[in-house]
Image (cartoon, rainbow, N blue to C red; front, side, top):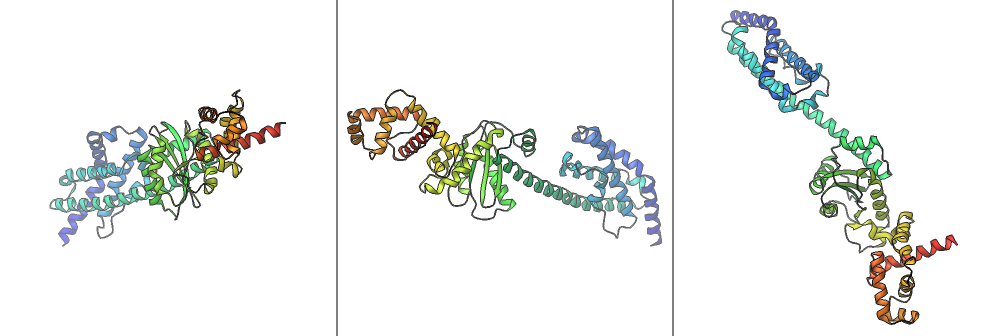
Length: 389
């Protein structure tokens, strides 16, 4: 027993004396065998060197009393900044541990007292196993912290987009969340029938990214806002993920060229979401511009302006009798014959003029829903003319 204790004491003294030798050998082996280490910036390589030295020193300290629990990776990484976990992955960290093990094993004959070589190799294997488990915990905590920070940042970004903010700081934050910036952008809004926890939000985000390319998710009380971006058909992508929303309407804002203009899409989508109950049979999802009449009813100035500029003014400025014909058709039960009698023309003439109205405005007066849109445009346009008189 005394002989074994003497051998252990002799081995421990040799380990203390050989710490510098082991550190130098480990750094040489890192440079020779790990391409990712050679590719690191000089500052990060120096931090890795400190971690290696801390690992060897920690093993030597533990070897003096193997009955105590081995020091974890948290203590070994204490000498390096937290940002190092972003420069090297968990896989890289485990490769570092393996290099240290191999170096100690390679030098076991030289460092261990005669007869203790096997004990030293077994000790370093036990120690490396504990450090590997501890390293996994370190990276899991770092990922959890980054995930929580990303979730808060994403919520702030979506809130800023809804407000219509557009500045360099916002663009930088969007980029930090992995937004590629390719293609157009569309905002969709709806409700959530339950509180979505982070895993559920993460699954929704992943589904949105699979469908579109880029995606941000914001939870605002019982309101769910998703920002989609990419070169794919965003309306199709939005339709794919609409079932993940809660009951009730799901509204799509107009597509805009970039994330900097997403506020315009968000404003339209949220206004339309407020107005959507007035059209219970609306499709799901429904475009915000398909709810222009309902948005006018809830006081949406953007919808009023859109109806005036896209329908009323072009008809008024057409120079013909299109506006008069539309008014007669709307005000007389949408009957071709009744409108023809008021205008003293043939019903076919009314039908022809209404087809021209559809060409000018994009809305067909002979369709029940689109006729309602045009009737609203006629009303808000007349009110605008009255105010100007």
